[in-house]
Length: 313
Image (tube, rainbow, N blue to C red; front, top):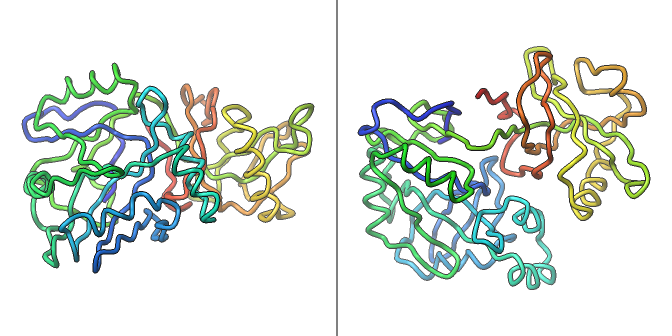
């Protein structure tokens, strides 16, 4: 179940529950015979990348169950860091993970339970599912059940701002769980303007970035194809750029995947098959439909190209 972007909290505050938005990677947790399998939004098994979380399956009494949550890495100040999480998202080699688990530990923050010991809870209201989740007391070295609040949305939003969090999720207390649906009964209100984007090309870098991408050309799927929304050249770490460069080389195509690109942006551009999804932070939408002052936040392995839509604020 996916949330719909909203510009403000719902008016009927007492009918809604609120959670902090954690700025991680969404994952369903399937527990079977003491084994946990983590599945991303686009149905990929991502378990191997997060070995410290897998102990949840054998350490808790939730066999034959499905939980919903967010995989999150925290910075030195204890705030969620999507940039830090990027270091874990595509790593599968055991030798690399031994080091990364210590340097960049990940916590599975659980906010819903969809089935419990073989009994589906999808038709139960959100308030009842949260009661079940709280009663399970799922807390361990690499998994937690963060708080939720019934009513008081303005205070929760203010707390998210003061603690440097991404925003809040508002969920109707009487709403059932609707798998795969972007529902008006779940709303996300962000403190930062962020946008999922599809990478359709890149421009070579210069100087210190010689041999690497200098900027990425970004788009959003539209009625006539991939609509160009601008380019981003800031927010990258050297490690992220090197990793992205390798991916772009494998996706090279001779023609632009965009419906149209301004001539000055298309000059010297290299085109790629539009399969990589990333996220940018930006100031606002320009009248021409471009991202103003975008900054790269990272790749989104949990978002499919067909799910990328323009966020309205």
